[in-house]
Each structure stands twice: as structure tokens, then as C-alpha cells.
Image (cartoon, rainbow, N blue to C red):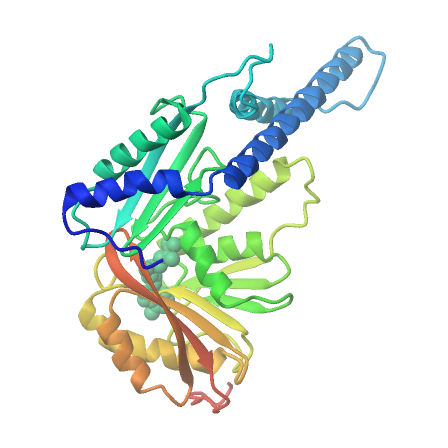
Length: 376
Ligand SMILES: C[S@@+](CC[C@H](N)C(=O)[O-])C[C@H]1O[C@@H](n2cnc3c(N)ncnc32)[C@H](O)[C@@H]1O
């Protein structure tokens, strides 16, 4: 935090190089090694399961045993092949080959940079930081076939150095059907977490698009009930397809209990939600920025209407909301008129595809909400 970048490019990059020697690498590398050994065990277990399923199947073919599900064996083979790929990584993680010789690790550095006050590019930072890592550990640089991926994340004045524990980025997890503004699952997770969901909470995303937020919610907070909707039928269809993919994926899991997922999706208009007043604990949504979806002009009507209706359905006193938008001016104006219903808490600045956006955490006040219809 509060890292001071030098204005001159060479000096700033030299500082990043020097940082390598000062970082506490030992514990993070131990975690990386432990993670690899767990992956290795999982691979072995799956291979073992696959072999026993195959031998059972053989017995079955010979007519000596019944009840082997051929489809299951196929599923496990899929898993074993996936995990087998990571097996080689875990061998490298021991720092030794199977014969016990020391093995030179292969590595790469990936830099993600956001902010307009840096005198260098992410490529330059990755190159120079990477050079220093190579010198420090005597590892071998390999961009494609690496054992260790060092992550250098630079966000304005914050620098985070990490070691990747997964081979793929997690930002698209659980999404198979994408739309024009599909939110990164990682950001969806962060927004939900800001609201601190508790078991049995009812969590609503009233403008869910392809469903990145409720899908992340139902996966990570399965003891809450998630409701999502959108006024665009195409978006609802995509979200429904994403839910189906997730259900299928869960069915294939070894430990699946086939309970389904606590999530419903509906086509609705946020201005008239078919939900009882004060019945919702948490609202998490990604509002139209007015760029790819809607327009800035429409937002001047939409945002106040959204805040009013969200204020109505949310429980007074305990309800909370995390709302993402890049149309900050319009949001601030709408919120200033809703001060009796919503109290502004933390604001988290986020980069959404290069756009400077904000997640506003709001707390529902005790004030009674305006009810437009008698049946509410
Ligand atoms: C920024 S997108 C949400 C993207 C979503 N988080 C995702 O991962 O795909 C905003 C969504 O608001 C929806 N929307 C706009 N006006 C709406 C309204 N009046 N009622 C319900 N949804 C609306 C749009 O159809 C769009 O899908």
C-alpha cells in the first residue's frame, strides 16, 4: 500500500527489481508447494478410481459382477486427464525429479497494471521484475511451460506480488454463456462479500444480465436463497443456460448430492418487482453504465427508480446493497435524493474493462419506504 513509484521510468523499474530481494518469498512458496502436493494426491486418487472402475467394468463384461456405471468411468477419465496435466507441475514443486535430483524450476511473471500515473507499461514491469526473480532464484524463464507463475499486480499506488495457485484465471468460473457486459466472477464475489451474507439471507440481483452475480452467490453462499431477474429476455435465457451448465457440472462431481442450487431467475422490470416490501436482506447488482447497455440519458430516470424500488423491497434497518456503476455522477445525484432510505457506506473503486467504476455499499435505514401500490 502507498508504494511510491519514481517518476522516471528507469528509476521506477529499478525499484521494482530491487523489491524482489526484499520480499518474504519463503512462506508463499511453501504454500505453493503444499498446493502442488495436494493436487498430486488428487490426481493419484482419481487415477486409482479410474483404474478400479475400469477393472470392475472388465469384470462386468466378463459377466462376473453387476452394477458398474459405464458413464461414470467416462467422467472420471475426463477428470484424470485434466488433473494429470497438473501432476507434472507438482513434481516440479518438490524441486526434485523422481530420481531425487534438484530440478531447475521454470517460471514466468504476469503483470496486471491499472492507473494513469505510471511511467512504465505492464510489459516493462514484468520484464524487469522477471529478470530480478530469475537472478534471485536462478530459475529458468519459460512463458508457456512454467512451474511457478509470479503475479505482479499494480493498481495505482498499490503493489501486490503473489504466486498463482490455479492454472487458469478464476474470473470466468461457472460462466459458459456470455453477454455484452458479463461481469467477472471475481468482482461478483467481491461485491457479495462486501455485504457479508449470512445463512438464510435472501439475496437479489434485479438486473442480473447473464447471471454472474447470483451464480457466484449460489456457489459460494449456498445457505442463502438467491433471486435474479432482468427485463431483457435474451439476458434471462443466457442466465438460465449458465445455471443449467452449473447444474450439469455439479452432477458430474464425485461428491454431488444433487440438491440443485438455491437460485431462481425471472424476467421482470426493476421498477415493479414482484417482491414483498421489506422481504429482501441483500441486493447486489451491476447497473447499466449507459455505454453498452442503455444510455446515460436513460440512467437519469432509471437510477432514481431503481433506488426507490430497491429501498422498498429491502429490510429496513438491516438490509444492505452493493451497487456497481461507472455512471457515478448520475448515481450520486439519485442517491442524494434517497438519503432517508439509503445511507452510503464504503466505496470501492474498481477497474471494469478499463473503465473507472465504483461499488457503493449502502445500508438500508429504518425509514418506511414509499409504496406505490396498494397490494404491497
Ligand atoms: C451491466 S448489465 C448487468 C450485467 C450482469 N452483471 C452480467 O454479468 O451479465 C445491466 C443489466 O440491466 C438490465 N436492465 C436494464 N434496465 C432494466 C430494467 N428496467 N429492469 C431490469 N433489468 C434491466 C439490462 O438488460 C442488463 O442486462
